[in-house]
Length: 104
Image (cartoon, rainbow, N blue to C red; front, side, top):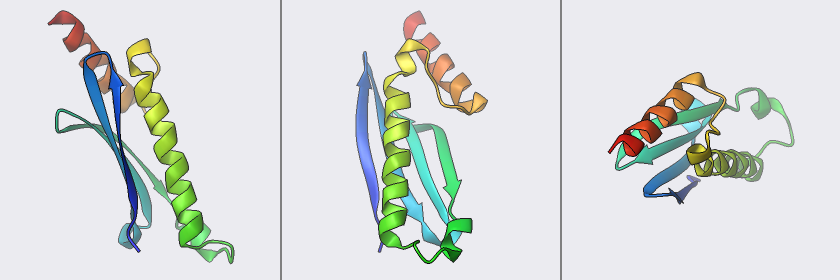
């Protein structure tokens, strides 16, 4: 089964498109954030260690992906108020994006 989530988060004049999917062949849960079609950051979480657990199944993977997607949506919503993801790279990208918008 392939599943994912897509959410548009509007902050001021900017729309952050948050897209999450389970990449089974890579054993990753991946969430990407796009602004005007350009990927400005991503978060990938491996679930390799969880596969060995008898409790791990598609439903559990779906819940993990849903939780990650919600977390990134909240972070994206706060991007305009100086909150950012834990990744310094994504944080810098969001700051640069906000600075360019303010300077226009």
